[in-house]
Amino acid sequence: MLVVVLTALADRIGPQLSGILTAFPVATVVIGVFTQVQHGHEPVAAFFRGLIRGLHSFVLFCLVFSTALGPLGLPLFPSVVSALLAQLTFQAVLLSTAPTSA
Image (cartoon, rainbow, N blue to C red; front, side, top):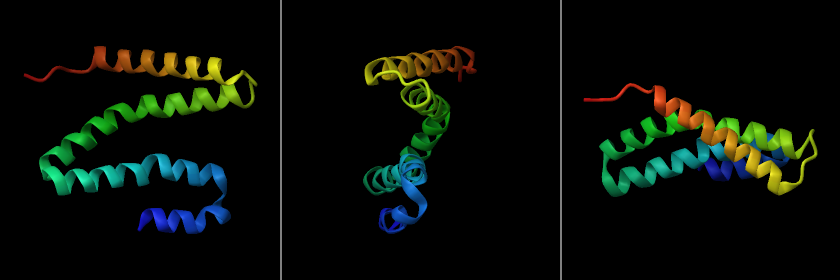
């Protein structure tokens, strides 16, 4: 239903907003529903916990990639590499400072 609504509104809300809505809520809801049906509620909770931990670095990737490709005007490959490096560095910092569970 979310995909149908987003597709119907894509012309009105534009490519940027529809792209944002596709990447975050729509994709995660679809994965969550399929995980629920196939494996139950505990794996869904684990999926969303992991998603929330990793979403910060995904946002950083999108921000760096769009800035490098758009306003900075870098070619595609350096834009992807710079975004990946930023994402991996940020994720490494988050993982190194995360409390360990017993």
